[in-house]
Length: 616
Image 1 (cartoon, rainbow, N blue to C red):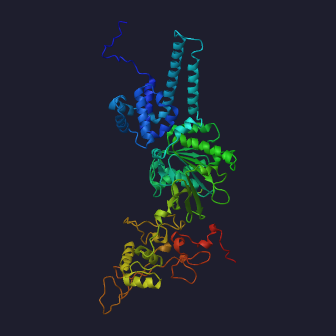
Image 2: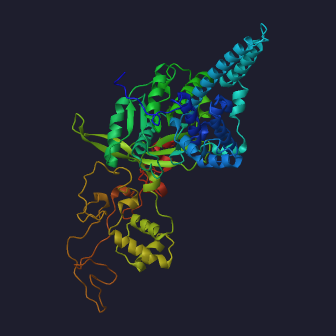
Image 3: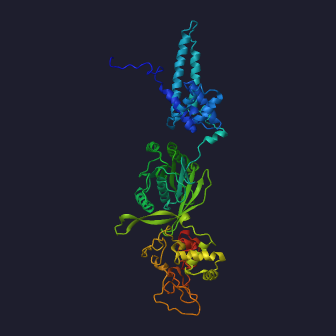
């Protein structure tokens, strides 16, 4: 042993190494300081007498007092409470309270409480053995005298086991909260605006083929990247998308989303196969998600992960819901389930057991038969703790996938959502912008001044105040042309081109963001006379560019004729009146049907089921 260096007395710890359960007690106290929501579970597992250190029992009693009275459980609050009780010195002083706060226990004090409980039980068994030996070896010992110690011990352990096993006595009493303690319960944390929340179960429902998956993928992409979702605040986090249905089509939708937004759909992971909720693999999924800690887990669809389950049975569907709840509890994520509605009504298909467990339910439906006129509506069918809010509406934008083509050479396409609530909200009636829009749609030349605009408004029954006429003229002249596409409901940020089969035109070279006559489609482009118009001299003074009194000219002295509206927007006998007509009943279109590019009125829309028979 000559090669072993001996420690000097001041280097050696006279107390020896501390037992591991001492650190477990510190992890319990430190974890409860930082995560008070775990206190009810810890309290159901152990009592103050289970701590081996008297100082720890003092801290635990002070911590419970603060928690029960709805006060903070921070180290500072505990130190103040111990000072009030004159127990701070006995509890180790300020420095020891600070040391306890460093033991957060990984945020799992209930796990370490089990270890503390086990060590306390072993100490009691050892104490029981010592008492039996002492009684049996006492000078006045009698046979059977130590039996009472054993009976008392077994009774105590039976009572504690009942509380630990979930018996509806001790454990339930330990979980009861008074009104002041409710403030310690964490509030719901928003994930997507007021629609989806962390640590909750939500569902998107709708008829088959009504864009549910498109809406869900759009939400997933925004959560993964942290972008606002069509004006709704988003908490960024990892997303896991369980593609249990339609896995082969998911790639096109993701690539279209990435091209539209110009960025990768980061932090979104896809599992392209169903995992059955009632199978053993579901436990594997739960553990995998617990390690990954995603913010959003999408299950698309409910039917594909519950194969063989009787949908109309509350008992069987209740088991499926509970297994999905196990996934939520293990991850504290928002678990979003995609489900179909029945053939009739707007309710989710099957038994009602699922809806009772939902925090949120969103209903998705669509109207229209092609990308140009489809409107997707999302309404909030259930919001357990918040008001339901207004419906959201979306249009579709067709996106060509880069580098991909079909066998005939045509591009491979998919669609993405475009918010109508943000990009297509028209101006308020009566405002200068609204009046300018009405005049644009009527084909009134943009160069008209206030007096001629007043006359045009009177002819068309548009009420306008005198003080607005100057603003109307300024807005229209700044726009520089008649019938801006955005005024007709086809803004660049709105739906797909209303006439995708027509040739496109180059954009204006000055990058002003406005359409000029050279890049408008043929039916919207203003026309000019090709022959110069001779100037007619009069005795009145002429303004620059004027050709004759009452006529406005360009800088060359050439008159600008009013544009010829598209014949497609006119009905028989109405040439020169650019009021768009329904292609079925030929009545004028107006309101949102006009602004959003519909070519039929609501009564003639085939999707409403009221399409008239033209031959009738």
